[in-house]
Image (cartoon, rainbow, N blue to C red; front, side, top):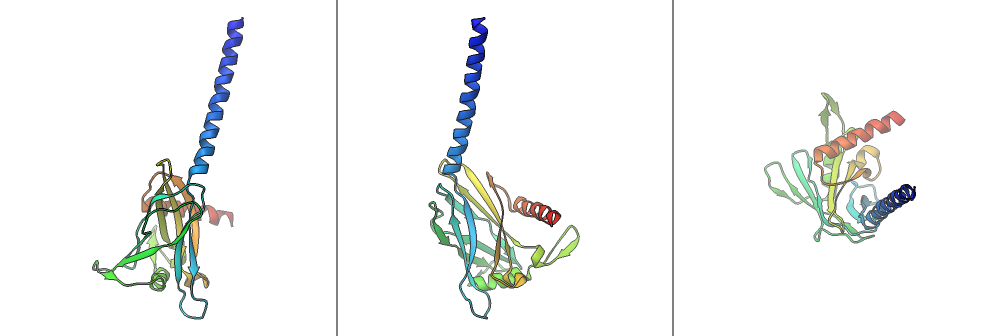
Length: 200
């Protein structure tokens, strides 16, 4: 009889230790994980064309290493946003730099104002239907590593300021583990729009 009781006590202790270990691992991951955010800071407040800076920040508790951003294609122009050192400490914020290649792969000296103009003109089609720039935002995909070497991705949608008559809108779409493609990021935005439209 004591053997049965000892077995149940050991089994119960094992379950408690396992659950405690899992909870501790989860808490450690939250404390070590970066949390990336992208914001648009408008630099001109007059009646001229909207201009400003895209800024990336780490609002998480852990550093983000090896930060990379997928290119954005607008009107046959390829935009690459980047950081010089590819790292953000917790609570750190940096202005994103930009390089642009034209339709013939030539480098273009371009500022954020031209990017925003092209973003407004971005049209497309999905499912055989024509869509305007309000329903076809630029998808901004950020990849990074956490302090433990774990891979993370963050997806944002960039909307034109001309569409909304205010500064550019940056919408957080999702955060996840591992790497994904720009197509998977676009699908995540599509799903979030279906959910959002069904709520309203």
